Picture 1 (cartoon, rainbow, N blue to C red):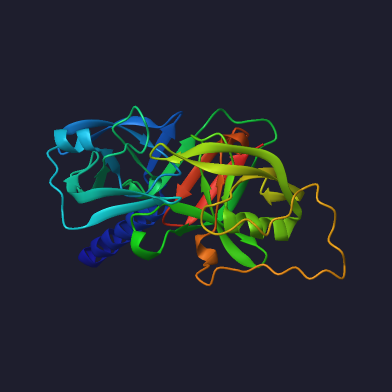
Picture 2 (cartoon, one colour):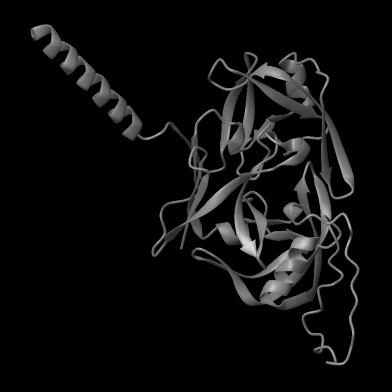
Length: 305
């Protein structure tokens, strides 16, 4: 009888331990400020940036790969930035504070100047990654968005995105606090113009996207702002020549079309709405205090005023 009681107590304690573990908060990586950290790569220390807009695969500079004595594997890395293609190498290496091995990449052009490399939240071992941009702001609210991975050849290597609905179809949203402008790719800009009204302004400029590559942008004004939780976006830049065609977006000050006029716009037969992307830059994210990637829950939580 005593033996049975001890077994019952032992079983209850085991269940209690499981319940406590299940209810405990998940391990979390806190990323404050600019997100610059020292990361071991094959016993070599690399100064890297944890960037919410970056790829999940760590991308190093060639000099860092040489210091870490990395040897190129059979799989190449190809990243298109507009019409330019950045080619690099990949291999397995010990990456981070844990003894795990991971696929890392390096390229002749640095992803970000002045650092040894960059990695997105998908490339970290912790299941929850919390970016803290600043102290909490008065009147802020939190929005929870579905989290999706980049698919296709870059699955597992590409970044982590939020998903919003635009015109009845999903659109990927990435968070890019290290670049000044909120940008949409060409077809994404067209879809946003159709869904929210508005058109192109005369303001044109070029801006760096990644790897030091700059792309042409034109400012678009919206009649109705895009609402993402507490954020309200009434204008943004459109990468007019990247991932589609922005020619169908009217000028902001153009007169309305004649009701009897027929307008024909050809669409690329290869068009895939899954490639459309909206990047929230520092101009929008400066109103936000925290950004959380919860990988087990497949959620992104953004807190802004």
